[in-house]
Image (tube, rainbow, N blue to C red):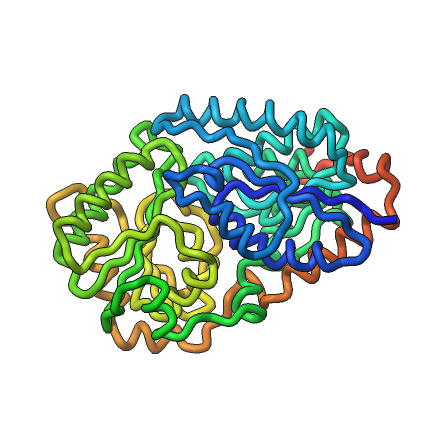
Amino acid sequence: MKRTIAVITTSRADYSHLYWPLKDLAAHPGVNLKLIVLAAHLSPEYGTTVTEIERDGFPIASRIECLLSSDSDVGMAKTLGLAILGLTDTLAQIRPDLLLLIADRYEMLAPASVALTLRIPVAHIEGGEISEGAIDDAVRNALTKMSHLHFTSTLAARARVISMGEEPWRVHRAGAPSLDHLRRSTLLTRDQLEHDLRIPLAKQITVVAYHPVTLLKDTTAEADALFTALETLPGQIIFCYPNADAGSHQLMARIRAFCAAHPNAHLFVNLPSITYWSLLREATVLLGNSSSGIMEAASFGLPVVNVGMRQQGRERGPNILEAEPDAEPTADSIRTQLARAHDPAFRDSLRNMENLYGDGHAAERIVARIVEVLLTTPLETLLHKRAQPIPTALLPS
């Protein structure tokens, strides 16, 4: 008997990570895949990226409009509420055997909460990581405690999930599925990339992937130093759109103004995953505070200048250079680290570096384990999470 597995995707970022798990689930003879699309995917402001899913040939079981065109934390909270309302009807109708979620976007709290009340088991990818400067950190940990199967990117992340009280048999180190693109997808040549981007690429390319810092009251407070450093940066600058968080509209406006004043700067609302990967392969440096700088850029030995607090605590390779968001007008820390990123000796030291986030086989591990569990584990056993013993060191003496 086929098992019905529902998968949630909310944005271009998580879809890039889910692409190969979705491919393998769709191809598995024992799986009935139900893809649920919501939030930024359906928003013209963020490129209506649902069209990318359609081009890839995945049937969409449900589309849920829930993203408010807002730039505030209140808008984020209301988006979450709308998502819960829409997902309740959808999941109650589908009643999947398992719901698959990924990462740490705040919208993912909605499907996890609905699944909890409907007694639908949840599998979660990329738990156990740390990003202290964003609400993502709390969201990720909450998803871990609401989930029944866990697929972590690193061994340390697996240990962290188990330390949160999850039974070891439920927790598997699979690797980050986004890295499967490097092994299973065909990246674009430089000429093909120029054709897709519709711009000639310069010899020196700085990719900027910068998002609001959602733990701060002013979520764009750290951006001043970034734009100050960009003012005198030579070469070509390619901006990626920020996440749909409080402060994203401010960042969009600032990026557009910067591009209007600097002919060497370009903004892309939506880059398909293969295009983005191909751009990272051609780039000289990645600047910003995106997890892609830490998780994906390492596969190319690409120097990354990571700005500010958003990714604090996340495991990282030797290609990551930490920069403080110094107050204007100097942005000395960012400029110093950019200079180091361009240093030939530093760049040579990154050749053949390994990516601690995986080997490109994550999707097959995830799908194989999910199917095995669904075929062999009764629903009651899967839903009934057993409390783990308190470590002796934490007990009162």
